[in-house]
Image (cartoon, rainbow, N blue to C red; front, side, top):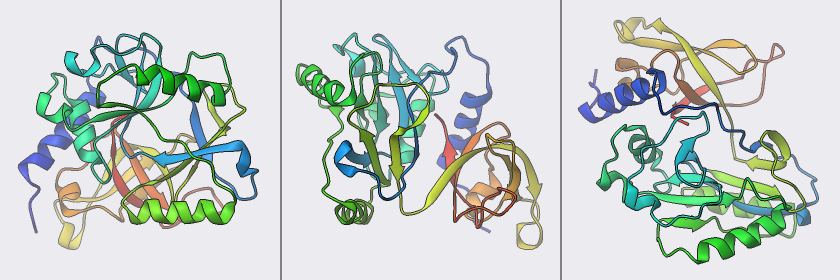
Length: 283
């Protein structure tokens, strides 16, 4: 059975310690705007469409970066030098298919310049702005045009004509390595809660759960992890074994960490059908 690489083992340990250890740099979770799932037959002319970035959600309060859960992010001073004093909402992103690189950089208590030079802060909203998204987007574009840092960017936003155009854009984005699309209603105020003004569209459903235990493996997985015991935010518990790699089974995500899983619909009791582990989340 292959053994996990030292880098992968170190990453799991670092993420677990960062999630679970008490720290003075933690505040209450940030009330950020969260997305519901897209449903067909919406008036698409009312929405702006952008790529869904597979990175770490980050809130800029005017002086400091924070995760969605209220952890202070130790970014290098040069990375945020000259940034606006207005709060920003965005994603720390290392590029398509490079979530591990982004999460590894963010999880470190002492920033590594080499890691952070791979990141961009992709900004999609102004959470303290009182206007509707159409106005917030225009003001955000003007605001960041004044900053010359190549790693501070406004997320490109587009309009689509109809459902067929939206699905074609989704297919192209995924084929090029993207995760999916986000839809933001232009006539909406910023609300720090999950709501239908912000929607996500992916080819597969996914969700997050918290690891509450480890089920031991059997047979060829004897002495390793058999499955993760997880709990959803709604309190449902189930085992998550599909999708785990040998390295995951040898160095499993720690109890208390949050993981992303993919699934195809729900059973009558509300648990996910064909749930499959995707990755550990750090935000």
